[in-house]
Length: 404
Ligand code: SAH
Image 1 (cartoon, rainbow, N blue to C red):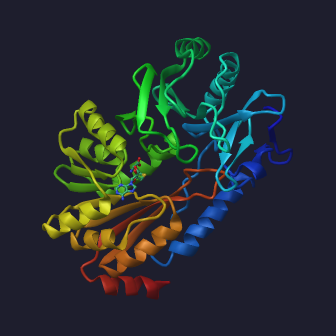
Image 2: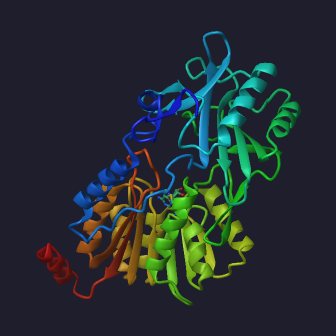
Image 3: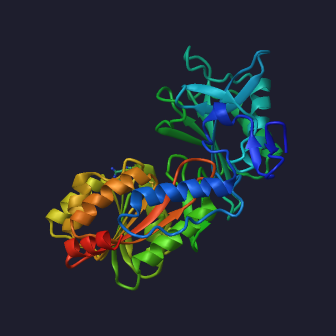
């Protein structure tokens, strides 16, 4: 325990002094109350569709984040300070510790600050546009033990980089790769197009549900590995996967969920907009020796519309869109393709509720709603929602409405 993170004398639960300023956590009440609050919200917004199962809680709701981003600046005495980028205020909140992040990240950041001082690597100043180091991204894997450090710089010239990498590796033998990403402009915390591998393979690997995944700096990957395994297991079980079942995994990221389905014999098409994630997905399929999965680097809405227009079909649609949810055009095309089941994985309950309305009107009935607490201490709620195509959808929905 340090000065910043202490324990509540009554409950023994952790408290962070940066809580109000940082914004990374939005909830600091006891974990049981957080869960109650999330369950209530899920029920308020979703129980008109089906019974909401009790939220799957974490055993230890701390230090779960496998993706850690830090920004850097100069302190009052000219020393290098690090912290969290507070997006609403567009400013840096200095913080040495975080009770959500993998504990391997903070010591690496500490060493880096010392090296920046010694090697005269200036933090990038957003207001003046001067300096070099914009931010760092650390990705970790609990299952493989691999750790990646990405140094995001405003220009490609990184002084004394051999010495920098050697010193980092000496202090942190757990580092398995170090990458420099060049991002001349853009919003804080974004990555640029160009990456230079300074040491190692330029990516880390993680194992989830028996599959091995490669994760590059820019690819989306779920941030809470323990809960992701539970989320994926729930989604794949609900999808009713078996040999020969055809699956579309829309918004597939690095192909994780589709690959778990392919491992169980399904024929899968993954669709993903981000090119880097899509390349990782194709590579991941090879590594896992999966031959019944292919990936399409496209907008999921366009892909669904084109596939529906061409008379395409799938038995199961798995969809895991970003917070904005799916577009009406995506949902129309999805219903037109008549999959027997839709497994909707949502990270924002409001957009899920909105999209369920369209899907239930288009002939689907919600049969299962399982919230999963992927982001303790934040307001985020992840939900697996299962829909079945109902032969007489309107009567099935009316029955549920009457039963309530
Ligand atoms: N199912 C994956 C990723 C979910 S996150 C996993 O569990 O890891 C949502 C993904 O949707 C991201 O990878 C993002 O790049 C992708 N995405 C966002 N908008 C998209 C769109 N319009 N079409 C296809 N993919 C999109």
